[in-house]
Length: 219
Image (cartoon, rainbow, N blue to C red; front, top):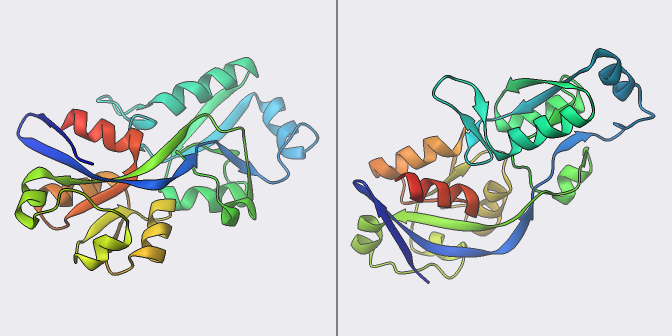
C-alpha cells in the first residue's frame, strides 16, 4: 500500500496503515456526573474548565491569533452551550491532562484521547465521537532512499532500523514501546516529531489518520 500526496516542496508518503482502531471520546473524573459535587460546582458557576493540547489538527490546534480551534473544540463548545456553560480552555501538555483530570484541577480533558484499559482505571470516558486508525508517514525522498514501499507492521520499523517519532503519553507511543522499542522517539507533541522528520533527524512519524491526513494536505 502506498499513497503519495505532494503540495509545495514536501512530499509525504504513507508507508503503513497499522491494524487497530481508536475510539475518540472526552475524559472526565470517574465520579463526575449529575449527582457528583463536581457537577454541582460546574453547574452553579456556569463554567467548565477543559484541558487540551492544541497540536492535534484537525481536532485541536492554534489559530493565527493564538485562539484554540478545531473539530473537538467546536463540539465541546456546542455541548457546553446546550448545558448553559462557558468553556474555560486550558492549554497544557498532552501527558499532563489525565493527571489534571484525576486531581480535578480541570473538569474535563479534550485532546483526541483513545480508550484504553489503563486509562479506564483512572478516568471515565464520554461516548466516542470518531473512530480512526494508526498510520505511519515518511518523506517520499527518504522512502526512496531506503527502498521502502510499505511497512507490514510496526515491528518491521525496528527490523529496518527506522527512527519513528510519536507523541509521549499517546497510545501510539505505547504501541511502539511494545512492538518496536528500538525505533521509538518520543516528543512533547506531534508537530515537533513532524519537524524532525522533515529535517531528517527521524525517518517517520506514527499518528492517527485524521492527523496524518491533515499534515499531508498542508505539506
